[in-house]
Length: 292
Image 1 (spheres, rainbow, N blue to C red):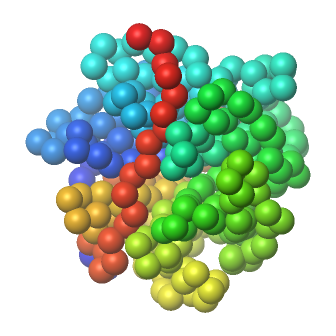
Image 2 (image 1 turned 45 degrees about the horizontal axis):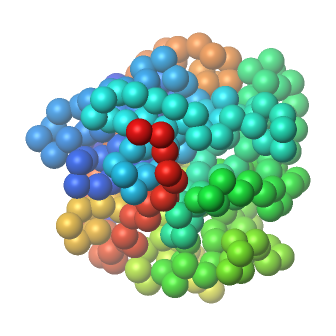
């Protein structure tokens, strides 16, 4: 698999998503939501907002962004923003990392203990949560070591979820979006973001090894693909045929910069592109009725 660098100069690039407008991603260390347009122009919003570990599209064209204060929405046309979710069970949110549209109008997302992380203290466990399009909020699982990437099986009936430093979990999704008991698809803790292709294979970003692992639905390893520069954080599929594979990477000290709230020494994080033999799944959108 051949990778080309299509944008660089980031501390910790994350959360790639692609649509007709371009390739969207964040920089968790430096801050901001970015969109690399088809003509090569790079637009930036929310330049001061760091720790955006997850993005999702809403069906009205707005972008949903995670962060230390919960989930906000961004209107790329006007630059306006607002809060979608700022509390969890009546308490301020300590942070939200990755998230994903569930294909039913809502979102799956994972919490993260930003206050302890920023203070250099042991982090409390993450929780796996669901926010329905009607606003119903539920904590589905607690005791997650560090909630990270999400993906859905091609039939939309199974959720894949990376618990970083532990492995990739999988759940059966009930009609009410509750989850069955989890099993491991893969017990390898080198797992950050993930994406699923049309064959049902799960592609996992390996931030330590610096590559992509393709895992078949039965849990067997199909292959590992090294990525130039290493420090792979996430990936997504895009392009008209969904075979463009976009990958985000971090500077060597990007993760430490996020935790210490400092700037990386060198901005070597990048957005790369390759061509996959199997197309990815279409991008799903949330369907929240956001204020006009």
